[in-house]
Length: 253
Image 1 (cartoon, rainbow, N blue to C red):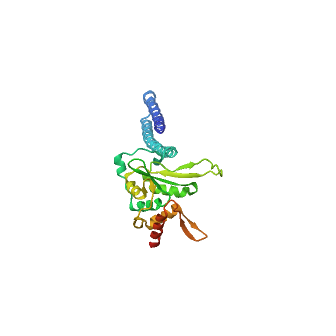
Image 2 (image 1 turned 60 degrees about the horizontal axis):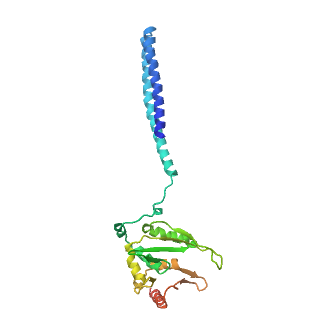
Image 3 (image 1 turned 90 degrees about the horizontal axis):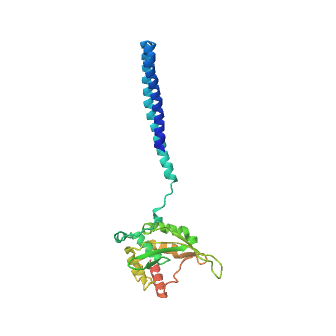
């Protein structure tokens, strides 16, 4: 469209110039030779033709510059209006070589240690395990924050899940979650935190739980008890021996 607009304007100026040349040719052939117009008048006409030629060139250059600006602005406008689908919303299957390139930084590993003491769980179907991050819908902001940390390990963004109403209370419980790729870099975590498919507390948790991990453990599965004025960590899924191990670790920190 823009190129067509430029060609139309340029062609219009060119046609006007050609009409002028035809008129000048008419004067040269008819008027100059038939009416014997004075040479001075001929020079005037030639000067006018020269000026018109210069004006024609300037007009073409100026027009093209305007069209270029229109083209650039139009391109920007079209790009801004075109829908762009985020890459993280396009799940794709990774090759074995691509999966092997994923590694966890020390900070992300510390965060995962804390999250595994909370609600994070690991699912291993075949060779490589995957991570599932899930929270109630009221913690959507927190879950999306976690996704920003681990989005490079995920095929798609968070999904909101709306359950059927509870038969007893009639309440509707909604959740938000996202799942990572199945990656070999998660194998050590799965081996340490799962025995026979059940989550456990590793015996070396004292060495692996850092202040960063503790912060994310509290965010993931803890709350502030205003009555006792202390932080409460939910550990109902662990055995009494594992809970006592965690108590000893926290008291020693």
